[in-house]
Length: 143
Image 1 (spheres, rainbow, N blue to C red):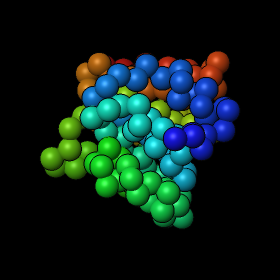
Image 2: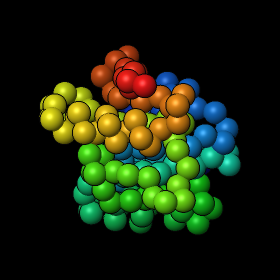
Image 3: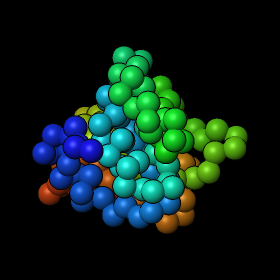
Image 4: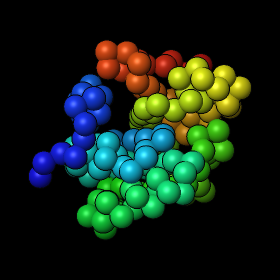
């Protein structure tokens, strides 16, 4: 199946250290193109794609029937600064954020809260990647 990713997003997904079976949190998923591609690469892994926008989640849901039906992708409308694991939800191995103001320095106060939320949502070895490097930067979360 041909990817519906832009060259920029494809480069970002290609740069992620993805492994079969991982649990990945995509923050600010928009219409879900990157989330679908990541889910495709994880085998029996899982992607939770979140976005603060109801419209974005509706677009992602409309374009992601196969991934949702297979259980490889789930969607949730929530801002990262309000994100919490649900009662029975396992921690994530990785988080990825592209053009998310709370994590790229545009909204530093929201960013402090977002990093705390991510620290609680990722495994002890969990890693956070954002755009802005070549093509990614890794943000090291304080223990």
